[in-house]
Image (cartoon, rainbow, N blue to C red; front, side, top):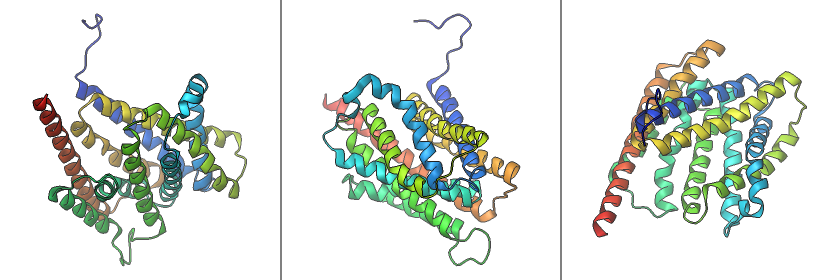
Length: 306
């Protein structure tokens, strides 16, 4: 089937890359709003609005599918995933509010490093020396950024610890998703995540509740919608393009958030942040490429057996 006249067909990796860039832009808008609204709306309250936006987006799907949208045989794992994800979101929002955007964003990429030990412990995957070495190198990059014991710059503190803990919790939710996707559809997982995320996000919001003024309500709604758009664009990009080719493009978030931090909040990344981020990016890319190679080898072996 030919393309309509006047329409240029894009290569899958090019189209995927455009979706990934859109995801990075959406992420930058979301985190900028998180920081801008942080003085008046604490992380727990912002998390509630983020979860509410995600739930409203999926509400038509829930109404259409009714009980099928919640069909599961393992509610315990779903409860754990949502509670860990909600707490991880609160911690990450707190870090984005209190740290320079570039620093917090760089630390957020450590979730890929946490997946290595979790894959070995929880999923029982065989972890080779290359993945172990890459993960260890990545955590060295974290130490370069946070520089425990340093007298100046962004030495380790509560916001940095919050982002590291958030990355670990998000890695746990990803590991749980790997288990659940064996017998659950993505729609069911999204519906459970959005619904339980809203429920778990409400108690923390009530402790710091305040009714937003109309302009702030619009910004909070935009922040929540951009979070959903960011996730949708990321999934779309990864599904269209080759994962190994898409992963490096995701790191353009570091550039976008650094520019937003400099232009809007007068934040200048330190040389330690840049050096540590480079090590983290290199190690996570190595892990991603290694995963891609193993996946291709496994598919080739299955094809030969058939």
